[in-house]
Structures are given as C-alpha cells and as structure tokens.
Length: 118
Image (tube, rainbow, N blue to C red; front, side, top):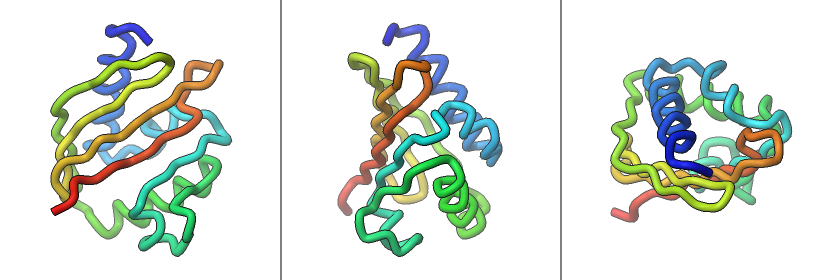
C-alpha cells in the first residue's frame, strides 16, 4: 500500500459516505468481503458482529443511513500498513478507526470498525 493509493482511497471513501452514495462506497469492496463492527450486533441482530458479502452489508448500511440521515464523517488521519490501511475519522459517535485489508484484486476483502469508548 503506497501513500498515494491510501490517500486516494480515504478521500474517495469519505466523500462517498458524506454523499450517502452506497454504490460509490461499495465499489471499494470485493463482492464477498467481510465487515465487522459492534454496531452490526445491535442493528442487525448478528451476534458475531460480522456480515459477509456486499448485499448483506448494503442492507446494514441502508438501515444505518435511514436511522442517521445527517451522517457525516470528518477525516482525521490515514494510517498505512502492508496491504492495509486505517482511516481515523469523526462520526456521530465520536472517534472511529476503520481498518481495511485489501485482497489480490486491490479491493477491500475485510473491514473492521472500531469506536471510541465514551
């Protein structure tokens, strides 16, 4: 993961979320990617906190956007790893760090959302 690619991904991802354009958000992910978040447990009733595949995650994100029509993310930092990156941003719950692991296609294969504890 080079810095240019990481910055481009973060900017496109934040912009797509702020536009509430799920099609543009989902373009960054493999069809069978996995998303893990503690919010999945509460919102989707999935005890593992993990959803698999674009359609399952799309349903989750649609529900989230319907519940939070004014949702906006403020980019704080992008951290680069090996075939991965973390976007640190501020959302309606405060500080968030979202980890993205990229597969061989160059798209996200696994994503993990982490929220600051109040």
